[in-house]
Length: 74
Image (cartoon, rainbow, N blue to C red; front, side, top):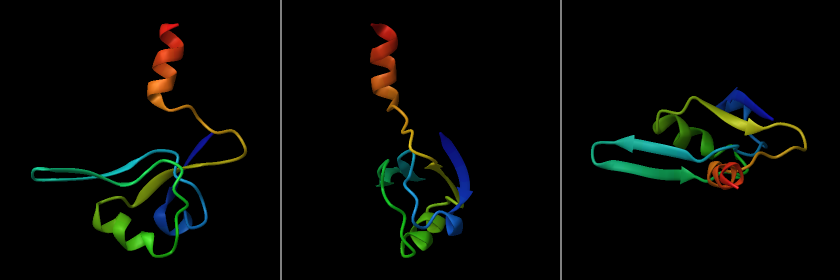
């Protein structure tokens, strides 16, 4: 299950998706799915324009979009 929270409230939680920073001639993954958000990550998230993130809530983990597409194809 996914839950959208402000980055300040996400400390100690795991990202449910990759966080990407965009800019002129830039597209960089700054945090990968599953990253445990720490206090020091907050400024980096905000500097990249991410003021809220989707985190995993509960025991159930999602399936990566590539894996979901393969499952659907089968």
